[in-house]
Length: 106
Image 1 (cartoon, rainbow, N blue to C red):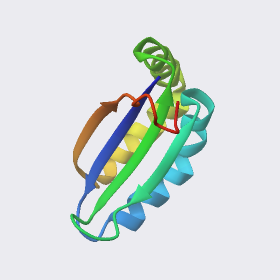
Image 2: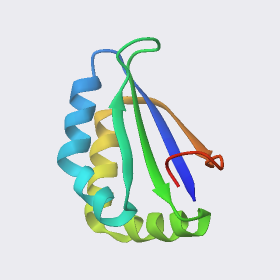
Image 3: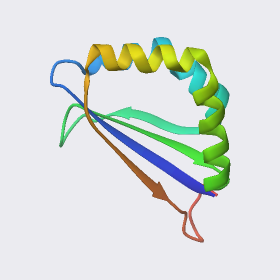
């Protein structure tokens, strides 16, 4: 099992608009194709203007297959274009995590 943790940095003052855009156009699609979301968060303290979400996959191959299926859906292209046109995002970071033997998420 692996967990992908994605962190997006959003332009100051645009966090609520970005979350709404994602919720309206991408959330249902990612639920359909990517499977188990372990959490979808905004940062309340520390480095602000960030969104963090975590997805569970059986393996890197499982992730690649799921992301490829998502990419083929025309609705995903609509979201990507709307997101690019809105210019809300400043940066993206992906981290892949593997559980320890005693981790509750396995």
